[in-house]
Image (cartoon, rainbow, N blue to C red; front, side, top):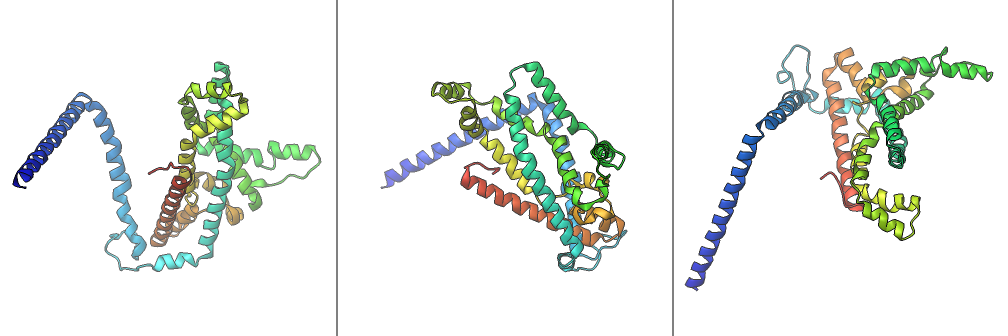
Length: 328
């Protein structure tokens, strides 16, 4: 028994030494790599500092959602209010309207844009003429790089009473419509302009995923007698399913988010269209900067962030159960 114990101790010591040697070798490799490519690590350091300074440290300011904060005073010095502001906005009809609008706009936009982007990527992949393909890609990508101020200016001109859309309505004997002032038209304007601006840009990840598909899979499908549509349905889509799933999860995680839509909505909406156009970010903007109610607006924003995190987590779990792939 004693001999067995000694043998076991010797084996365990040898394993420990092997682990230590491998760890030291790995650390020496890392050090050599860092010395050789120190410029890349310096570049990597810049975004890390940016996120720490401008993203994570300011998160401490969320404490004012639980305090009665007044401008000019310390965020930690005012009286504790607990969940007062959370209870307040849950019963606020203006917040409920903004929440409903945010969810409906994002959901309709997702249901229209997501399948169209995938279909457009599949169609682009079928273009065999390289010059024509590059031309179509360039034309479809360009709207993404246009400033939102210019985009909203173009939209206002298009739908104005003297714009080309109303000119066409008049030509067919109709009466001009003030689209920008009617709440029932805001969703249509928001979604169609959003699809136009993001359609081409959204295909980049899909095309990158499609380019990594093994050509032998298409050859095997062709040998088996699969037609063009069947090859797309049974080869292309299953191979890019992880990419589709990832993008869908991220989109679902932002269903209640309104930060990305703020600029566009802010430049397009007006008091007459608040009923369908006012979203959480514009609601927070009016309350926070407009009315100086910082604690209340911070509570609303914090609630929105937690909802997005919850949706992202649920979407990820569902995706992992159904498709076997997720973000984590």
